[in-house]
Length: 183
Image 1 (cartoon, rainbow, N blue to C red):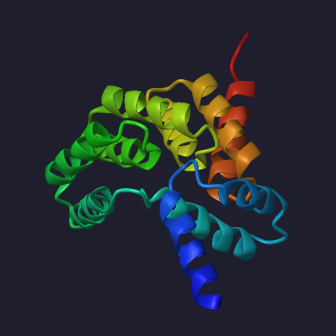
Image 2: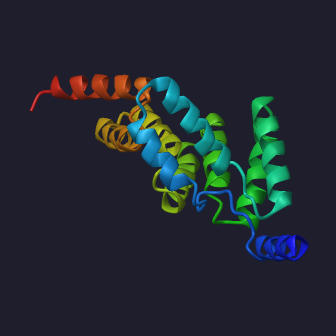
């Protein structure tokens, strides 16, 4: 009897592929925990869990392998190669938010600010809670001297993840700068 139950459970498991991207059902409770975290240490642990889920496609092992390779290339400073890998990933699955986010980061690092913004917008269309993409967007707006855009992006990031002190510092500095502007 136990064997029959285990076989049935295994069949059910196979019928529903495990998803581990921005659509993963584990994310909603993690975002609630992140917002309510009592300490920065607790928040960092929850952030790592969210990033781990975002970074796994889950239903396509080849995308997962490409993703890992792209991250390794990115960390090794081989940015153009990493861009090609993440471009392939988003071509294969244009609904994989973290593929767009990683490419956005790489485009920014190579000086393609407009391309980075386009990819961030795509990331946010797929995962509006992507505090990393919002933070990056804020930095880009800050770089191109759009205080209003940076304030909006940083504020949105902090609404999702209030445990990013460096973003909070940037936001305060921008608001102080803006308050000092003549009318």
